[in-house]
Image (cartoon, rainbow over all chains, first blue to last red; front, side, top):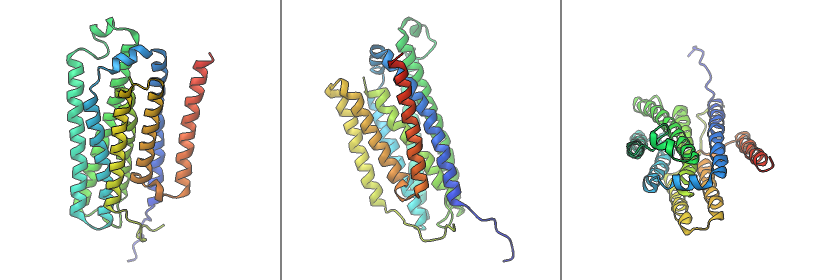
Length: 201
Length: 95
């Protein structure tokens, strides 16, 4: 083997992913700050507007995301244990959870849109300022979160294919590990979104 | 660093237990606002959410096993965010 191999820097790759995650935390952090200030200035409107949200769907999606976070964390252990079959099953469970989350969101948003509870409708123009603010923030924050979830799912689909092909194995699984870190970020954001938007009325 | 060194593999039961703790905290998150504790509700909700986030970062995101540099970076970023919140609210309260 005279070929010069390019050294792999897993620690560097992981640090890079974490630095990216920090920027994401500050991005959503900014939105949470806007929410906190607006809520403090329009407490009654935010109280009534948040009662329009479906707590059951929100809670269901919380459980779905927590379970998916567990299964993707387990899938790394499975890869480390050279258990390809188990890793495939666990990543698939995570992807299934992503689909369930999106289906729930479809029904949730669909209902809001069907009763004109979204920014820009005639109904919204008649409601007070706080209502408009709440629903603008609701759609923007859950929408941005959903976008992150879709991106995370795409990364995990690539990881799944690579696990099947043997390109992700016990010696090299950085893509899966970074994909999992991203997936946990999606979970982290929802952990704060759920109580603040749905529950604290 | 070569990655083929022997690494600690977290067992499935550990993750299972972590999920159970997270689900219990989620149930608390849902139940407590319905008790009408008014002023304390937001504070409790944020504390519960922060606890859950801490558990996810420690166990699922493996911060427990990470090197010191990464842990310091996480604390620094959270510190920066906390000071931004503090400054913003100070601005609104004393304006």
